[in-house]
Image (cartoon, rainbow, N blue to C red; front, side, top):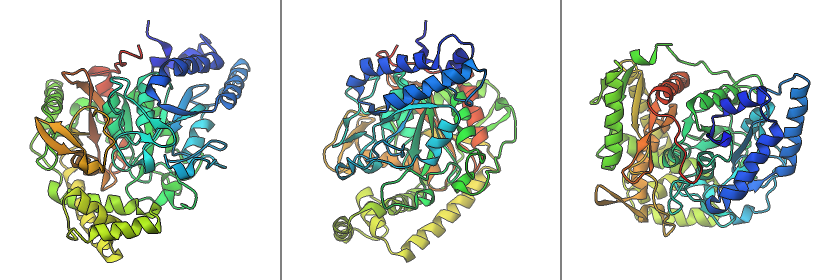
Length: 486
């Protein structure tokens, strides 16, 4: 029989409502798995056991009275370390923040708690949330449950590893450079990067940063072992009932034509010269396209929403600009010096990074205008197509490599060396213009590693992305646990 910890959150909730086990028993079962599996994974790095047990007891007492705490009643889960949870550390992996204890709880986390979730801990991240590997001097390195020598991704790497290993029912992550989508791809789980601004980011910040909700490109969203659970979580995270909706201010106007999945028009992009992907990724994408055709969908493989080079030119400097507020004066001075060695419109990642971190406001406005043109092109594209499916990364999960800058680390793509940062193109494809993207598992590589794809929709088209993902889960590929977790 499947271990209950590997079931979907919805199925766990049904077991609780049928009184097949208590919330305390379910939490203890997860804590036992943490004790057994987490030493090898180092995915869950902060525990809040006493408060979680009290919360689980409260859930059981409410159940005994015939009451429900909400849609997540009694379900044990973890959240990404970068989200504040009052009384627990929020470090973002910085040694200097080791003793930073949150005094308030992030809005998104509170929404899950208000819905009945039992948050028992936090999961690992890279320093500054700035890597597709999750390692830092505070908590150490997280490993992939499919292969401990490989990264679980980043920056929500501990989150995806914990989910794949059955250490929680749900997870809350964040994504500015594929930080939800990449770990979902590496670990074989689902993740949703919402339309920009739909889920409040307040409380996803370090001391002195009071503008988290206005972070350019960055979003918060769920990870899960089921697309059905993603939908449940998004209904809660984006609800205007417990706060104020997108950006914490206005309700979302969702876009979903309500068509059956088999009537959708789907464009499939399996590769791009700007960021070549490995043959196993292309094959998995082609297999998915063939399945969609057999199911009667309109499938196109030649349509492209925007010029790839223009997308890359605009994305990287705006991404680095969005993250430069945390630089110290000394770090900013060093970035200025490094930028002088590169042209203003540098296309290679090092130059785009340094120039992006130090650009003038005038330059930012020019790039933002270019982004507006790309946004209009995406809008026109979605007049002809309902969804676009493309890769998340160039390869399956990478072997640990923590040396030097990210662009100095190489991975093999079709037998050729490629800098780690080249595949950031796939992060920016929808991310630059704030579009929703759902990460879905679509297969395994010849080495037995998960392969995922991202399902991209129009702005506020989150419901159609999620509905399509649910259909794929039901008819194409459901969650497959890594051998160590089964």
